[in-house]
Image 1 (cartoon, rainbow, N blue to C red):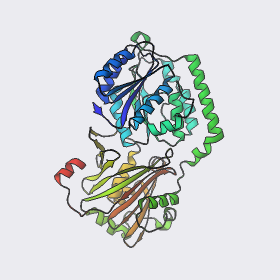
Image 2: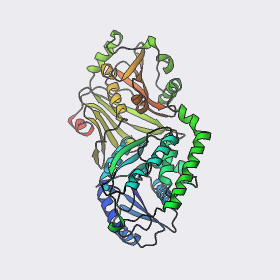
Image 3: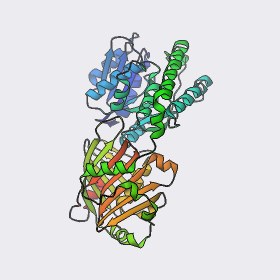
Image 4: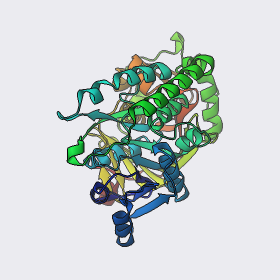
Length: 465
């Protein structure tokens, strides 16, 4: 079991039958805390759960006076979770069909990419009716059209981790998306808001009526509701949204560079990023003009420095600010120990990414966005020959101060990583920006390095592997 102070499980429940208590108990064995939202149930299924909550401090039950729909229940739970200081919620069905054993994988992915909506891609069992498997293809096609992207594998599968702030900002003020249309509308509107999407596979259990399975989906009424939802979304796309969606992949680096300098407050050569990316500034990985820095970094002693990280999202007016310590070792890789807003350590080395929190450590599943983590490690090691495989490199030096821009060579890297700009003095990196879009970026300001000293055995144990 894993306990968390930032991520909880949210189970909306409406007349799910006697299976509910067993589902809640199973989920508690994998993750805590758990919030059950009883959406005006009339079958008494909430009573055993309320009894369990009296002896289980990690379980909380929110009872709504009348049935308002799945979307309304999820949003009520999201408001409750946010009020208690949680930042993310994994929403799953209360009937036992969603996989509790996949919770840790989804939560680890969300912790590694906290700005993302982590979506499930269902793996259906053999006993699933064909109509359920194939009938969703129309919805998938419509959502791909509405997002002008194929970033979503399955818009109907409700097993997903929501970042609560953008969810409440986008769906909270609206009257729509309160029943079975919630999963799809929430995902499309979060996509329009610039929230990145990540898809992870998850096995599904199918319970027929003979097995005790319960479904409240009304084929006539709820399909009409879904048709009306897609009509509204497509109309909004055609008359309002499509210009911004077309513009989204094209960042303006000159503005980004100015924002970075203002945010970090680091004195540096003031050449902005756009003029830097031109043929006259192209850097070959083994160019003599940069060989001395490559050699200096390759033999650099163990380094520790404070850092401030600012994450900018299109759905927030102010950036999310994180602080901590960075440790760089030529042999062991990179370690980022975050102190605020929560205590966690991210280790980036040749084995990949490892996340340590007070409740344990996890290795996130493979994901395209991990390319940014790998690039960050090579940048702090000034490993230009390795970076040259994936990026075109542009740079300029003025005395001890230098600036580099890394432009992805492939469309996949441009989408998943974006452009990276870096500046430093001597053999020390002082600022990094990873910009995916004009409104979504990560800016890292690194303070002066502390006096060099080999890492102690305790530091190696705590901050590396």
